[in-house]
Length: 201
Length: 303
Image (tube, rainbow over all chains, first blue to last red; front, top):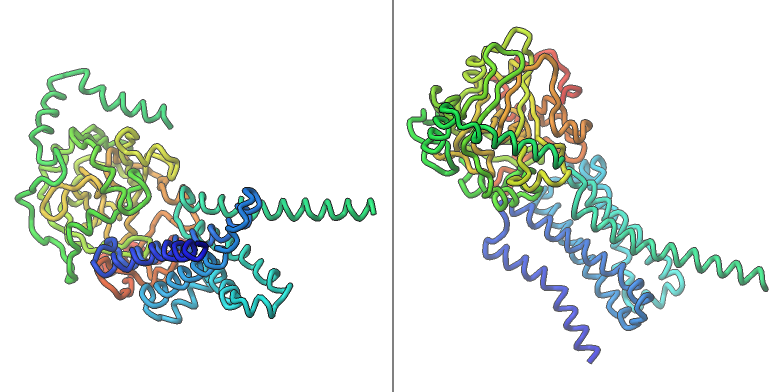
């Protein structure tokens, strides 16, 4: 039963990719196809990042504990769509013009942000296996807190990309802000009660 | 914003209410006029008066991928949401420092001048480009008719303000109405046109119907659309994008591959319909005709 659910979620996560491939092969991309590929893969990467960051708050707020078993899959799908996004930029938009790419990463703040989010996600994806979780022990959780930085960088990447900051990038930044805000709140509350505990003891 | 919108509506309705012979005649001409609606055939224009070697973009590309924030910020929005814009009758107020200020009916202003097809490159500040077969008249001929005084050193243009038919104007994405400007010598340059058509037909609403500016050596946003006012002034006028973000968009906004936009390179561009990026040309390939106007100017400072 659980296994079926997982397979279903997995297939569901592939739907945006399948639809994009279909549109590409049938010539149904937009009038600027390269931009369409870039925007579509980018927005799905951001959506999966949001879903990944939402798992813990949803679990704590609703008490639906089993949602945690989807966290790794959602995170890996975020990485999958980020890889597609980056590949489209490098291989299609810039067509491997490495000097132009390096200039972009260094000189364009919005690309610097996107690139940072991408690079920080690599160690997270690599250490997402059971073996690495065991090997890293308590350090694993510390390492995987990098996802918060990825979320912030991705939100800024989108905000700084648009000509006028309005609409969709603002909504995504707000949602990511809220999801990270929960953690800050919980952290503050935990450290307060910890201190209070120490005083009384 | 709403009050201003309402005022514009009242102003637009006023001539119909007065019902003088003259306005009736103008309305009649508009009803039969060649610019009364988008996508009507234009005839008698001089074909390929100015052209480029490169392949033209298709009608579908030019009418389906637009920046016209009055109808939304996505490229597909102008096509989708501009259908409700009524462009007839259309009046252009010409005023400021000139001897013949007047409200001109579009037909009266354009039809005395020979229409020409001008096939120009169009380079957007977002690093994409197209080749568009415009039909229009040299702006200089329109300027001559108004007889600007010697004090007039700049020209300011204003887009229609009508939030009821331009849904983007109900958002605060830019300050409305959209305004643009040119220095007088730029405005009178033979390459600068007021376009009223494209691909042999009157302009589609998403391309700036019924009349728009085309300045092919400048970034596309200088080509203000759906113009209702042309004003002669003696100071550099405000322009919408530099009001919105003066760090990124200057008054001149000449296409220049060596002056990057802070957030993307201007060295290359993607021609819509092509896979590989092209190198962007100085003044969008019109340097021979226009570079002399900027001799001695620091183009890094005057971006």
